[in-house]
Length: 349
Ligand code: BGC
Image (cartoon, rainbow, N blue to C red; front, side, top):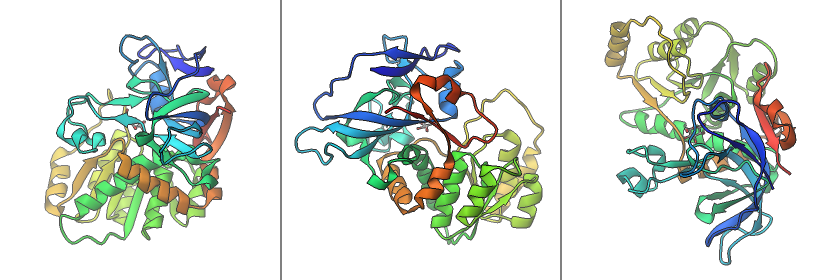
C-alpha cells in the first residue's frame, strides 16, 4: 500500500513509500483511509523543523488529520465495518504523569507523550491504517466529505473549554468574541463561538476570497484592519488567537475588555523580536484580572465535543473550508500553500 512518509528533521524528504498492509493488533480496527487534512505542523515536519520518527526508524508516516472507514473491527467493539472514523492524535506518556493517568494526555506534564504522524508514532497518511478502538471516534455518516476537519475542531473545542474554565473563576457572561486568523483553526473557532450564541468577529489580513465569505455565511463579522484599531472599538470579552504572530498576540493581550481571556492556539516559529511595552501589558492584565492561556492538542472529551459541533454544523459551510482536494499521488502539490487556501486535503481512496 502507498503511504506518505518523511525523514523528520531532514527537509525535502517527503515521498510516497510502498509499505506492507498493516495487521491490526488485538483491540485495534483496520481502517481504509478516505482523506487526510494537511496543516502547518505537517509543513513544518516536511521542511525538517519538527517531528520525530518512531524509535529505531528513520522514516515516519505523516498525517494526523485523519478520516477513514472501518474495514474490520474486533468482536464486541462499539464500531463496526463501514463506520466513518477518525483516529486520535496523542497517546499518554508511558510513566504516566498525573494528567496522562487521568486521560488528560493533552495536558501531559513530562513531554514524553507520543503523537501519530508527528512524534514517534506513524500517522494516518496511508491507504490502510490501524487504530486502537479506544482512540477511534465515530462520526455522523453525513460527514463523509468533511470529517477530516474533526481533529482541528477538537483542538478548537479544547480552546473553548479552556475559556470556559478560566471564565468560571468569577461571574462570567461573555458576549463578544474575537478570533484572530481565518485559517481552518480560526474559522472552526468562529463556528463554535456562533454555536454558543456569541457575537463573533474574525480578523485576517485578506480582504476578499473564500475567508470573508465563509465568515459572513456563518453570521459572524469579518474584519481586515490593524488589530489594535479593532479591539479599541470592539473590546472583546475573549480572543481566540490562531495566527501565532507575535504582534497579534501582544495586541490581543492588550485589547480585551476587563476580565478578558486570550486563548493562544498558534504555534509560532520564534526567532523574531518585536518591541513590547511589557510594563503596560502587565498593568493591563493585573488591573483587569485578564488571563492569557495557551492551548494545544485535545483529549477524548474534546473529540466528542468536536464531533457534536460538526454534526450540528451546516455541511455546506464545512465544505467551504476545504478549498483543495488533491489525490495522494500528487501530494507535492498539496504541500505548497496557495493564497486562497483554507484547508487542503489529500484523498486516499
Ligand atoms: C496538532 C496537535 C499537536 C500539535 C503539536 C498540531 O498540529 O493538531 O494535535 O498536539 O500539532 O504537535
